[in-house]
Length: 457
Image (cartoon, rainbow, N blue to C red; front, side, top):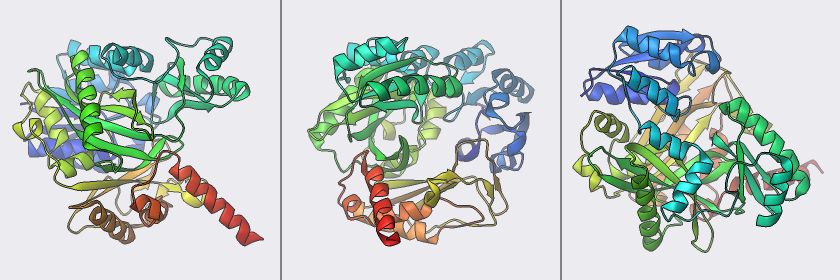
């Protein structure tokens, strides 16, 4: 087992990894930007090193500074969390060249699945269904128009290095295609340093289902069930649940087998997620693979009674998958709400600032993953997520009831958050029946605007 691990991330995921390391008896080294000097992960790590100014391009994305911190701290391994450098194959290679273990899959697997266009080709070769789309990168708008017309509108323009909903644009006609093509390229270049895009058929209002994968260096590859991530706003997940209310035993078996087959085809190791789009007829299509731990890994942990982050660390240290992971069975239902520092009443505008009072809910069946506290200032430089509320129960209805209760107890004063909006979803009849897809939130917001307009009249 490792003696000391550097966590190349910030916020709640950095704290999550620190806690897992402590339970495994591993020392921790936190890195932080000048904006995160008062962050909780800095305070709870055994050692902390500042790696630069607030902008992530000058701190959390600076490979040389992270490696320097690792050498100063004499660490055995680096855990990248999610985001930032978590899916950067070059970073994994640099770690290996410095004799530091990268807690994640091998660089070859990251490259195979990190480039979305290559991932589609890999999935096809493994016999996993994919949506119709371009065979490679789309270099110009003329080529984009030709492909879109061949496939048939609507289509989706997607960045090959994208993630988190960035670098994605839907197009329903030639005009929106040209505009979306250029804006997707610009956003992708800004966010990922890679402006490559491809085009695929847009399945309107599908279900977004992902399968959790764990694999070791001893040839064991398993899936640990699915998560439903269809509750989204502008391709950003806001609520997830495990298991999916859409799933049947037959569909779960087929999608799970396809997920394992794809992971085996790239000789995967560690934690990963295979993401699919599922239509109302039960047809599923590979979308992408995230070669890292997911934000929403917590609901799989609570539903199955396992610790995915600990398992990541142990697998990276050369241990085989634990028997309770290889033979994992779901025991509970779990739901997660991502609490963002955003104002739902103002088009979800970011709302950084000082938290004047912070009280997290508790009680049986409620878990809070957060780096926030009273007096903490949410910086404007990073993702707006400040907490995750996870509620579990023996039935889906029980988990929803616990989530309602937890959200009603949560106190965050000084900034606006998404809690009131998520609380309203927990009371929505369609959500409670499990009848929703990726268009649910947009329809809900449109209905609210219409009601507001009627009240004005």
